[in-house]
Structure formats: structure tokens, C-alpha cells
Length: 238
Image (tube, rainbow, N blue to C red; front, side, top):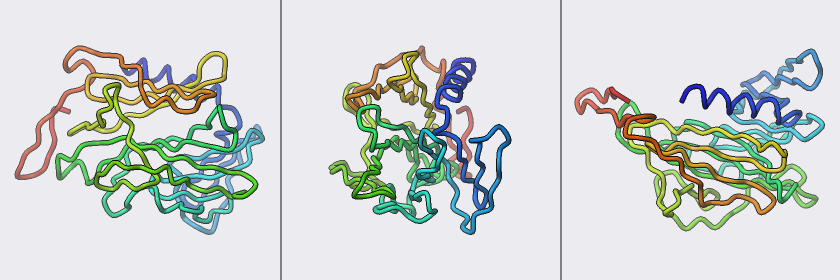
């Protein structure tokens, strides 16, 4: 399985072009637009676990999975509304353009309501939508009307679910998450792990298909449930 994930990553890096040109790492803004990368010092220390630029390589916004900052490094409208910061332990986060709406972007995040080293709370997957348009040139996180309940989640995020419409809950597991494009360069595939399954969500001109294609593996082939020491909180065998 390590080979599979490396292959997916290589496709992602080679096909996204300019939209991945900015990496916001604390006070450092790394710009890869030109052949020689440029590192600019930014006054604030916001850390972008996921960043996105336009097709010309100009920064649009970035996120740490909890907050969203616009290109001016200021909190975007509704940009504090992704998750409840006090209960969300962010594992992975990815930004994906919506092929069906050039003004919209999906933010996909895996998180745990509390530290995995102490408790057995599961890793969950959620998504939010950012829109940049004439009315909101610096972007806005849309209220997508979430009706699910759960620790850390807000009306600006929705859970990703499996093909049976069941919320993904990976006890004692990290939230593996990656993205790739098809060979026609007109749709994306978001790939998440749910125990012994890989869930592939298509994102095309119709937007996000919330019903994934599931790839099943034999027991413990890609996932071991692990055990937790109730006295120390240590997790082993995962």
C-alpha cells in the first residue's frame, strides 16, 4: 500500500501546476511560481496546512483545518467556523477546486475530537466550501446547512460518509487523506481510508459526489485496530 500512496502523490504534484505554488509555513511564504523559489517573510505566523493559488500562481487562501485566511493573511468571512478549535485535533487537510463551479473550492479535513494518544475518540472526515466571487472577492466560507451533530462540527462542515450513508469513524486510527486527478484533467478523486476500505469520492462538473466507490481489503491488510493501555493511554499495534 505504500507504493499506491506514493503513486497517487506523484500524479497530484505533477498535474496541479500553478495552484500549489504557495506554501504558507508560519511567517514564511514560499512561492514556487518562478524557476527559483522565493521565500517571503509575512508578519503573522498563520500556518497553512493546505494552500491554494489561482492558475497564475497567485495565492487565494489557506487553512489549518480550523481557520481559513484569505490572500491578505486575514481571517476570511466565516473563516473561524470550520471546526470547534477547542475540541478538534487536525490530522490532514486538503483544498480542491470545484470543476463545476470556478468560484468554489472544497476543504476536506480529517480530525479527531481529542488527542489520539489519550482517548479512543475516532478520526472523522468533514468538508467545507469556500466561494470567491464578485460579492466576496476575498472569499467566504459557505453555510452548507449541516444537520449532523458531533464534537467539533459546525453548520459550515459536513461529514463524509461511506456508501451506506454511515459516518466514517476510525477508532485508534489516523485519517489518511489524499487527492489526484484523472488523465483528462477534468475531475478529481478524493481518497480516504476507513479501516479496511479505501473510499474514492469523485469531484467533477457536478461537484462532489458524496457516495464513494469502495475498495475493500482483507482484514488487517491496510488497517490494524490496535490496542490502548487504559492506564497510560499508549496505543500499540496500529
